[in-house]
Image (cartoon, rainbow, N blue to C red; front, top):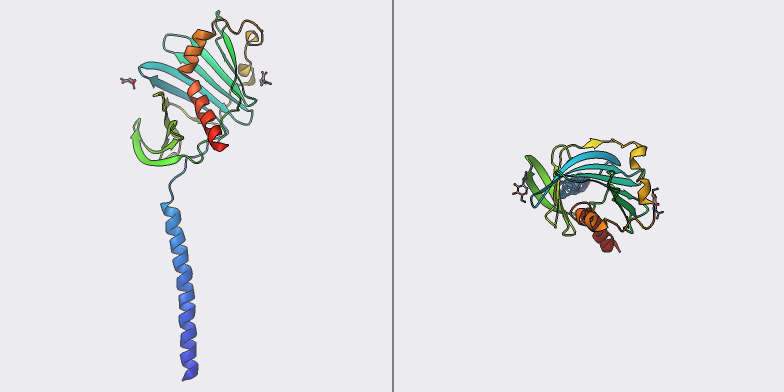
Length: 225
Ligand SMILES: *[C@@H]1O[C@H](CO)[C@@H](O)[C@H](O)[C@H]1NC(C)=O
Ligand SMILES: *[C@@H]1O[C@H](CO)[C@@H](O)[C@H](O)[C@H]1NC(C)=O
């Protein structure tokens, strides 16, 4: 009698033990399911053609992100205007220049390198929205950038800066690399004395384009330290 009672108790405690494990597993499972999605890190190298429409000003950006080689390029075509090369290196030097007869170049010591592939880490998830015809997960980082990623393909679709500058990604070629020769800033970028000339006009163009990303990086750096 006592023996069978005892084994029944054993059986019960074994069941409870397994039930506990099951509950633990299920709880854990539902935890991971309710976790907010995180932005997909950028591939180490990609090329994107982007269209920027900022308060009625249109620009085409050729973005070449090349993290292994520590370089990032924005080739910016202003509508019926200047073709501007915005080249940055991981050592914190940035060259903004034209390759036309005007031979403009401005060297900027930005003081920080290019974005890391996981630069969106820690962004706040805002839910899903439709953007440019795609259902996107949306994140916001440091009140500076709003980032839209396609729910299905995980590709970036759109990003918007607090300045009102909005970029639409038209292509996203993972692994595409611009040939080395194209990354060479022209010789007049290295001639001293000439750089101040024409830079005011260049400045206004730069402020209207590439610098938003610089500001994001600066702000993220400030946040990190
Ligand atoms: C560009 O932006 C302006 C104002 O921000 C807006 O009126 C216009 O519709 C936009 N154009 C496109 C093609 O999105
Ligand atoms: C950073 O690297 C680029 C490309 O190699 C070079 O042209 C530039 O002079 C470097 N800047 C500094 C401050 O070393």
